[in-house]
Length: 127
Image 1 (tube, one colour):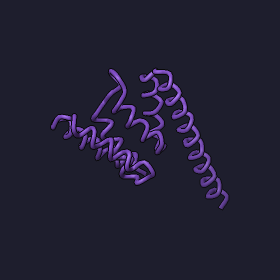
Image 2 (cartoon, one colour):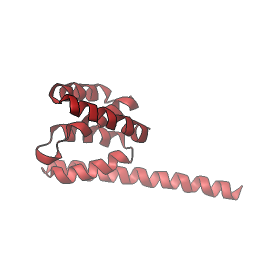
Image 3 (tube, one colour):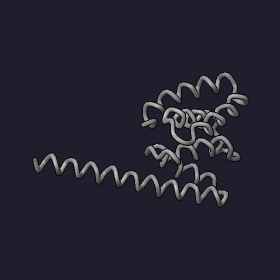
């Protein structure tokens, strides 16, 4: 019984630590973006999004869609918007609008790649 309780407490603490880390990474990403440091924003929001932080997933998708230069990545943005839609949260409408914008400018090859990436991302990050 004590082992089960210790295991449960360990899992709860571990999940809490990951959630706290995701929030901190998202905060760093938003701060970097507000200063025009989109490369750092990409790094932090990517990490937070991959930890499952919904807000970071939305912001990361938009960053990848709208940032200048090498940070912009339509394929990744598409996949993250699809993750947001799969999670059916408050930003679903915003994500659908983002997808509509992207599909107008993406080539057929990019869309095919985005759909493959989407399948993997939904399995991993739409929890």
